Structures are given as C-alpha cells and as structure tokens.
Length: 433
View 1: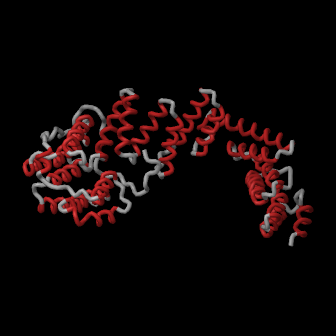
View 2: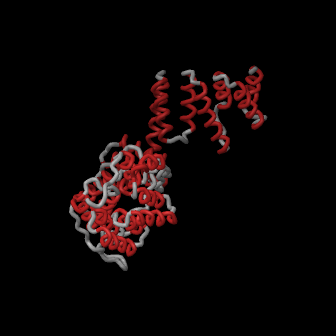
View 3: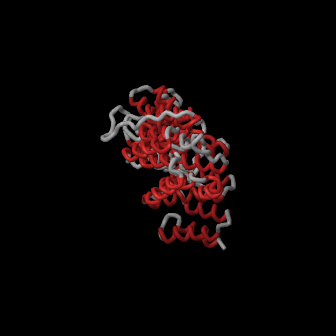
C-alpha cells in the first residue's frame, strides 16, 4: 500500500455502484446475466492492435484508478498513436469528471470509425453499468458480440455488470480472471478487480470470517491502493485482531490526505488505548488517550481515559517540581512539557515551565507560557498569587520585544488601577526606555 495518495486522485464513477449494493445473492429487479463470452487468444489478436506506448499505458492506468494529475499532458503525448481508442479514453475521462453529456458523442465517434472494435462496446457497457443502467449495458455487450464476435473486453464488460448488481462479486471476479487469461495486459482491470475483492471482504466480515476478509482486503489494496473504503476496512480488521498500531497508521494516513472520517481516528485511538490498558502497558495507553483527545474526543467521551490523563499530567508536574528543586532544569523542563501534552489546561505547569525557560534564557517561549497563564486567569476572573504580567514583561524585554513589554505593563495598570502590584508595575514601566 502506498504511503501517500496523490491529491489528484478522483475515484472514477466506473464501479462506484459496487459499494452501494449488498454482497448477498439476490438479483436486483430487472437483473439477469448477459450472454457469457468465450474467446481464444487467436480470435482476439486478429481484431485490433492495442497501442503499447509508455504514454498510452500510463494514460489507461491513471484513468482506471482516477489519478488525474497531469492527465491532459499524458493524453496529448499518447494521442498520435491511440487511433480509435482516443475518443474512448476521452469518454472515460469525461465520465470521471462528471461531464456525462460529452460521454456518448465520444463513444459514437469511435463506433462510427471502428464498428467492429470490441473496445467500443465494452467501454459503453462499462460506463452504462457505472451509472446504474444495467440493461443498456447488457444491450451493448449483445451488440458487441454481434459486431465483433468473442473478445476478452466483452468478458470484462460483463464483469463490470455483475459487480454493479447485488450478489455479483464472486461471478464478476471469475469473469475478470478469465478475461485476464486471454489477455494478461488487459487495461481497466485493476479497479474492477480491487472492488470485487473488497465486496468479498465485506461479505466475509459480515459472516465473521475474519481471516478470509483480511486476505480479500489485502488483495483489493494490491490492485487499487487509493481506495478509501478498502483502507478503512483493512484498519477495522487489523483493530479487531488487536493490531492497533498498524490500524492507527492507516487512519492517520487517511486523515493527512484530507479524508475526514467523522471522528473514526479519535475512536481508534481510544480503542487502542483501552487495549494497551488490558495488556498493562500504561505508558502506551496514556499516549493513545492523549492522541484521542487531540483528535477531538472530550474528557467525557474519553471516560476513564480522561481521568488517566489528568493523573498522569499531575504526576509529571510533581516529577518536574522535584527535578527543579534539585537544580536539574532540563529534566524539569521535559517533565513540565510532558505534563502539558497530557493536559494543556494546567496553568500552574505553564507558570513553572515559564520559570525554567527563563532561567535557560529562552525568553520568548517563557513569555508565551506566562501570557497563557495571564489570559486564562483574566478570562476566568481568577486572582493570581504572583505578578505574572511583570514576569512576562521582563521576559519580553529580554527577548528584545520592548514595545510588547510596555504594553503588558500598561494593560495591567489599566485593568487594575488599584491592583496589588500597581506600584511595582509602575516602577518597572518607568525604567523601560
């Protein structure tokens, strides 16, 4: 499976209806199988010669999987040698882009110039099947048989039709495998094969055949690594088998690609955390709980996880204080930072970390943490036991943020004209240039 899915991937409408039907055995109304095609390599070879240029192969592959980045450039490079296949490939591109009105003219243009080419009828049948027009797709296959005789493309088209109807996954996969026997380099096979395996994986999982489901979803991803549903199913199966790190990795990858799955990643983090708790791996559980909250779960939704995070954050704070009292600033800093990763709302820890950073002469970060303490206190109408605004102003001044330092002091005087630290604030303000 690829580690990164191009942002230009647009799932082709071809085979989209596969995932809209169940994996049972009932036929959809008006269903029924089209005539089965048997072809021999000699018969197929005599019909046409497929353009085998690198550009043509890349174009077919990208259209099959919906990778549209640079597709126009690839089409231009392939165009001179495509022949009758050019309008057929353009029809597929229009279908992917949802420009349905442009599809039929392209197919009819190809049919007019090559009425005995099976690719014409197969392309038409597959695009009709993708749009749910199964009877029209079957009619295209029948016309193809009459015009061209037996050809592997028509086997492929029948597979598309089978996969677009309820209960057709097994039969569709068998037709694809037979078509591949006649033509090992047959284009537009990968996504169809991937979707067939995905449907079989879902069916196996519904029947609690987890091992078979895992095998099928791996086969699906080996053909189409871009399919979001297959990757999600793979993650679910891995999680069911207790393989949470790999399941989490898949969902994180999807999230990084912009696939918003409505909190699935956050819930997977929580599931992983609970599994780690059962295995008594508390540190790993705490990290997964932290990630779950970062991904959007509230403490209430985390349940026990929220309590565990708070307890771990408080312990890290205590460890930091102990290190600070021993003069070990680096360890204190690490423990305070860890505490805030677990619970960023602990104002006391923000203040303690600010002191450590100031002593390490990291003045601007120190000022940032003191500002967080001050802002939260003002918002919650809290009375702070220390002149945090003065600490922040000194850190800002040391960081050469002189105007910001003055502003912090002036803001306090305006906010609390008779405040506890009015005199010391005014004195410091008078010393600033």
